[in-house]
Length: 288
Image (cartoon, rainbow, N blue to C red):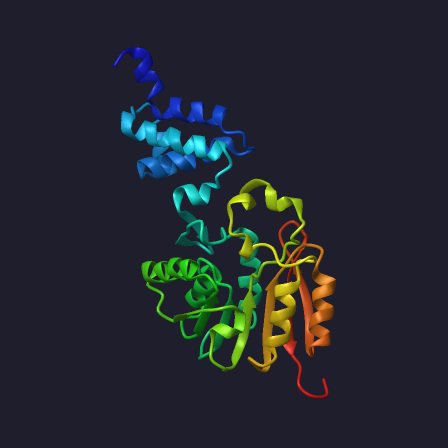
């Protein structure tokens, strides 16, 4: 190998090359994430070994991933990894990519789940299992049921459960409540599809590669939420809570749906960018 080839194969040179190739605002960070994945090292290692040479096989693999990312493939699908609630998750193209905004749903749900004692929790449309796993991890005495219409997604969720050693989750296949036998829950959570089918964002960025069934839900994006709100009354214990993630401009409509279905103490929480993100309501008793 001549001097030029040696120079082009160092960690430093590969990262500089990648940052020029990737068209994203976080090109350098993404370049590091992909190289960490290929080399199976930490980001700290990259900095400490910037002048180390990389073998040709791994360089070729790295450049293949860079090309895929430059073409728009999400980082999470390229690495098959995503962290949520500090839990390392495996994901595939069969699941929605867990996002930091969804951690607000977990935070709000935990406010209604005692730290000890048996509590029954239902996660509708679990995908990779991110929400269910976070709740089960934080409340190990809880009994968590997680559903999804996609058997492929449930396979990913089960794999994450086994990998993390979390044993208080049961998975069921089917559409929303039809996946389970009649039973009652203290808390029901969901990050359902809520994007309008005509929304141009579905054809942009990472959304282009994610399962459309986990993203879009009718003309106004509320088809799934309407169904869940209506049916949840038959599955919640007295004073049980229902919580959703939703779009930034849907909170008022969702609050109205909850009120119409007999929910009280309805509130909307905002994400870190001060956008309406999660709405919750308690199933009211007769006379409330």
